[in-house]
Image (cartoon, rainbow, N blue to C red; front, side, top):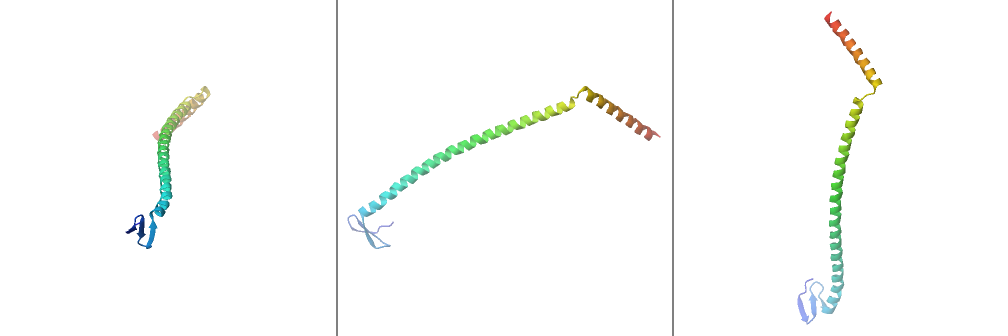
Length: 118
C-alpha cells in the first residue's frame, strides 16, 4: 500500500480509493495479517525441517538399497558357482554313463577318420 498524504496525525489518504484511514483501523487490519504471516512462517520452517529429515531418510534408504543389491549379486554369483560345481560332480552311475557316451563318441570319430582315409 502506498500512503501519500498525512491529513492529521494518525490519518492517511490511500490514493486509489481517496479514502481516509485511521491508524487504529490500519493497525487492526494488520495485526491479523501479521499473526497469519507468523503462523505461515512457522509452518514453512516446520515443513523445511521435515523435508530435511525426509531427505536424510531417502539417502539412508538408497545406501541400504545399494548395499542389499550388492549382497544379492554376491549371493547370486555364489549360487551360480555352486550350481556349476554340482553339475561337474556326478554320481558313480552318471560317471559310467558319461564314460559309455565318450567311448561311443570316440568310436564314431574313428569311423569318420576311417571314411576320410579311403
